[in-house]
Image 1 (cartoon, rainbow, N blue to C red):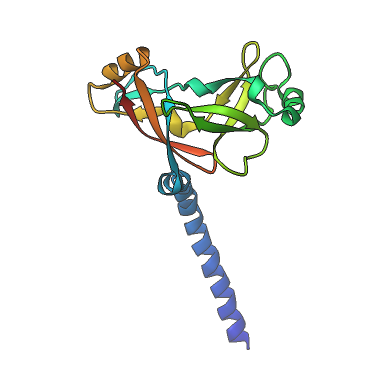
Image 2 (cartoon, rainbow, N blue to C red; image 1 turned 90 degrees about the horizontal axis):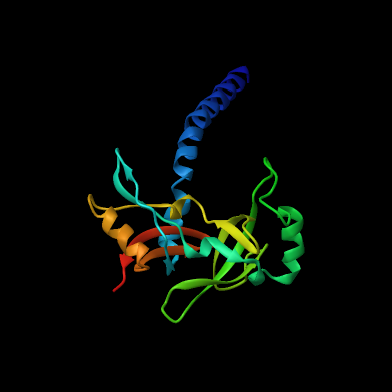
Length: 194
């Protein structure tokens, strides 16, 4: 009996050590799971961009992208959510420092050229259709600034092609190809239009 109790004690200790070793590994692997799921299950959409082109000395050329859907007029916000939004963000500027970000769900539909545009916003995810989850803050006048997350910010390109893409963006000839799944988005490529 005493021997089996000691064996059980040692077995519990083994599982604690195993858990202590696997927990950091699980934390490291959790970060790429969301973009991998978006790439696997997501729907492809096109967004218009307004980029800035810096250079990273370690990774080479990349294009920092800004999207036309990052500033949206508050008129597309559903009326039932409008009061909750303004109570949280206030009528003047962003939420108070230290407050958790307010997340909105932006419903998207393609326009005549195949570029997806916001058609509605709410505090809850839509039951159907394509939508993006974004952190919201007050913009100037009647606009709401939206942050769609890290996976839409940078796109790394081949060496010495970043300036060409920046020039195309300034002329309004650059679109981003994005995969969207359950409100999450991952930038897959950028393309110049003719």
